[in-house]
Amino acid sequence: MGLVFDIGGRGDKSFNDSAYEGLERAQKDLGVTFTTLETSEGSDREAQLRQLAAGDAKLVFGVGFLFTDDIKALAREFPNQKFACVDYTVTPGDELPPNLAALKFREEEGSFLVGALAGLLTKTNKVGFVGGMEIPLIRKFQAGFVAGVKAVNPRANVIVKYAGTTGAAFKDPTKGKELGLSEYHAGADIIFHASGSTGLGVFEAARELHKLAIGVDSDQYDEAPGVVLTSMVKRVDTAVFETIRQVKSGQWTPGVHEFGLGDRGVTWVYDDRNRALIPDAVKAKVDSLEAAIVAGSIHVPTEP
Image (tube, rainbow, N blue to C red):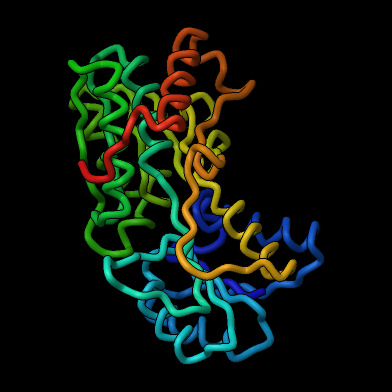
């Protein structure tokens, strides 16, 4: 297996690390070997993918929506090679090459639940959202979060800020801290970030001001114990592992694969470490909202 990490690379305690966990599990459970590469500033994405595609990898992953164009072009150039892209941008009417799997998530569903949690727990009736790069993918997190807040607390106000308009917006903790401090000083007492390692700055702001923050992609409790209320977990590890398992067992299917609440592709963290911050009645309310989303009686928006 071959995999190229997104901007931020290994050690982002978030999106990329989750992909790596999927590789490690596949190595342990399925006996596969793997090679990983990192893009320096993103300009070498195509070269890194090409290096793996031209080698002996049976399946090549690109981790992140920024790989979309390069991986589609290479899939056409290497028709006997299998490719998969996490967060692949599917353009309406666009036909995927028959050797490419687009791995997508219903981030808005998990974001709705942590929004409801924030809406139920806020003491100021103000909460915040900090996004990385302002793109449709990250707006799905914003849309779900705001909808969740409003579903349980219509009077609550959500302050929204983005770190930038390029990929660098996902790896700027200094900017994250600046935005976090701004939202906390404006009255927010809980902030949800969807911004890669930029969010580590949001945690720093929360720690300084004794406020709460919500992590993303992976369980980020260890980054700021007592400050991280919960995390909206996006199971990139599961998507990577399942795709490898399909290839290994001969059950590979190209096309779009979506992961949501119903198949635990997205979820939120509730365990012994954060249980004291979340009253039983609040947990029960969030659980009931989750059941309603899975049943289809609540439709979560994907655009704010």
